[in-house]
Each structure stands twice: as structure tokens, then as C-alpha cells.
Length: 493
Ligand code: ADP
Image 1 (cartoon, rainbow, N blue to C red):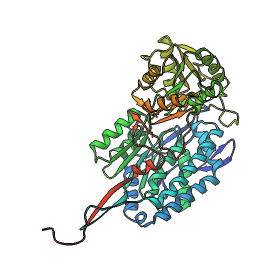
Image 2 (image 1 turned 30 degrees about the horizontal axis):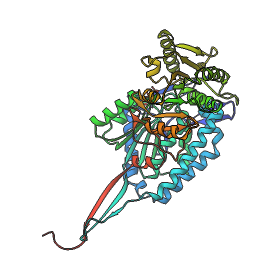
Image 3 (image 1 turned 90 degrees about the vertical axis):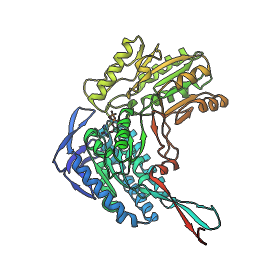
Image 4 (image 1 turned 45 degrees about the vertical axis):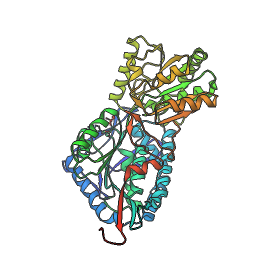
């Protein structure tokens, strides 16, 4: 461990090793990498880097536990362990939130919200542990047949940096309540909060090897996990590009099961009859929440012609009021982007937009002179062929397009290779339901945005993913059916 300090918690002990078999170890090659504070661009600390050899060790630990001790743990006990983990996390909310803000740059208020959602998610899946059921199926009088819902086995889970702890919880909740074991690889940009969390896993009493947590890079540890011959399932959240790479690796190794939660370019549609004030707030939150670093960000905004001018003026004003700055200031809404690389990517898109002839209504430039801060940016006068209309920017940048008819906006909304989320703002119930039904997206929000719940399934249509996380739906990602069919009486012939 190393002693670190956050502005709100004072000194704390930050684990920096690999968490394998409930123990802290160094990597076999003793490699480390630096973790950067995105608000200051300074190094926070160094953590151990997992290489292929460490992945092998972690997978072996998960396998041993799956075949051994974890298998004998009752469903009730699995649930109890998850509840305990949630309780420990709750007691440590302030620390977890502070570490998240430090490492990721999200505002402390939002980070606390994330930790609350983590706890809710763990408790939700804790409750499912003893409700995983099969069926008896009557095929004929001489047969007794039933299905069992069994765990898949050793699951590799690869998560991104935008919600480090929340993505961690979305992944471990359903996997552990159904009886799997895990090798989790966090994102190289944000390993710290999961490492703090690892100590809670041991404290809660999970047997060794059930949940192994490693820090490392995608091309090394991530690739080793996706092509590993002894990993039964891989779950990934991140870019569509890497999702493809992972699926190929799974296909050409052992056909491990794959679930993917990928990118988006989600349409946010505002009809003339919408409550304009409320809508402006939701549209603003839809794109700028988490600094635009949400896979479901409402980045393509469509506004009906009757309120277009009024909307643009009000939205611009609202975006300019968003407080950008130090994540540890309680009044901050938007912190820095995660890294220099992301900062550069986003600024590149902004330049592309300007060059392509779009009008930059506000923002479009750096905020301050230290840290990866970008001002909330709005583009108008955009056309569907522009890169800023087609590609996921993953930053505080959106486009606003004027539309006339419902048919036209549904077609425009669906004109994307992605299909993660969408939203409709209207006072007309018929419009709301009709448009929601016609949008090809995994989630449609009506008169709100980004309102996720661990009770509701979340995932992508089209190239936004495979499978659904959260809700009861996520249990299917971590269970497989076994059919047992038993002869009761009489010879075959
Ligand atoms: P971003 O570009 O926003 O960082 P990525 O999709 O590249 O998003 O990263 C999300 C997660 O995927 C991270 O944990 C990263 O280390 C991992 N990753 C990146 N490349 C690969 C790869 N080739 N194989 C497996 N995992 C990868």
C-alpha cells in the first residue's frame, strides 16, 4: 500500500498490488504503471501491472475456487456475503467517493451518487442469490425432466474508466449471486477505487479466489483474458472497437460466452409541445453528466421547428451555467476528461466540426490551463454526414438538429450504427409511446434522461452491444441451463 491523501478524507491507505486469492501480490514481472490525476495532470501513485503470467495465476485461482470452496457455499450464504459487502461499502461511502473523484475526476457529489448506486446494485443481486430457479417440464409419463440454472464458471470482466466503481458493481453483482468466480480487470486509467474495494471483499468473508481484481492494460492483461482457454465467459464494457476485438479473441480461443456493453450516439428528441424548462434541464444533464463520458449520453439532440430558436438560446444559457472545475468543490458539476488522450480526441472532434461548417454555439475550447477540462460545447447547423453527428465523441459535445415531422425524426434518430439509448420529450402520451416503440434503442427515456436503475435492464441494440446488464435480465448472462431427463419406468422397447 501507499499512503495517499484526498482533500475530503485526509490520509488513507491505498492498496497498489494485484488482488488474487484474497491476497495482495506483486506482478510476476514486477511491472508497475502510473495513475494520473486528471484534474492536475500529476501522478497520484503507481500500481502493479498484471501481465499474461498474472492473468494465468488469477484465472487458476478463480478456477480452483469455482471447482472447490465456492461451489459448496449455499445460495443463502452467497446472498449474505453480497449484503455484507454492500454494508461495508456503505460504511466507507466517503472514502470510496473521494478515491473515485481523485482518480476519475468526477465531482465528489456525483461520486457519492455512484457509490449509492453501487450499494443498491449489490443489495439487489444479493436478494436474487436464493431465487435462481429451474423448471420441471412434463414431457411424458415415463420421464421426469427438469432444468437447473447453473453458473457459467470463471468469468473475466473488463471494465472502463467512466464509472469505475459502478461498472465494477454491475459486473460482480449478477456474477457472484449466481455462483460464478471472477477475474476483474479494471481500466488502466482508474484502478484505485476497485483496489480499495478489494479489501472489503476479504473483510466480507468471500472465500479466496472468488473475486480476483487486477490492474493492467487492455492489450496485455485484457487480451490475455479474452483469449484465455480456461475462462468460461467474458463480460466487457467499453468501446465498440474493442468489443469486436474481444469477440474475435473469444471466438478464436475457446468460444467463451460473451456479453458486451458498448458505445452509443443516442438521439434526444424534443417535440414542440414539451415542457421547455424541464426539457432543457434533462437535455443538459443528458449530455454533460459525467462530462459526456457516458455510453448512453444524449449527444444527438433533435428539436422540432416550432421551438427550435427558443430552445437553442435557452440550452446555450443553461450549458454556460454548468460549473466546470475542481471535483472536490461541492458546487462542481463537471470535472476534467479522463486523460490527455481523451482530451485530444475530443478537441479533434471539435475542430472537425468547425471545419465541416457546423456552428459552435458555445464552448469548443479548453477550460483553464491545467487538467483535462473542456467547456460544455454545442454545435448547430449540422448535417448527418458530419463526423460529429456519426461518431461517439465521449465528451461534453453535442449537436442540435431542427426537424419538422415525427416520421422524419424517428428516421434520423435511427440513422446510426448504434442503438444504446434514446429519449423523447413531449406532453403527448401517444407521441411518447409511438416514438419510443419506433426507436431502435435498448433504453428509451421519456421526459427525462440518464435515469438508470439497477432494477431495469440496460444494453444495446445494433452495434451497441450484446446482452443486457442490470435487472433480472443480467442473471441470464451468468447462468446456463442444464436439462436433466430421467427415465421413470419401463424398458425402451
Ligand atoms: P477507451 O477507449 O474509452 O479507453 P476501451 O474500450 O479501449 O475504451 O477500454 C475499456 C476497457 O477495455 C479497459 O479496461 C481497457 O484496458 C480494455 N481493453 C482495451 N483494449 C483491449 C483489448 N485489446 N483486449 C481486451 N481489453 C481491452
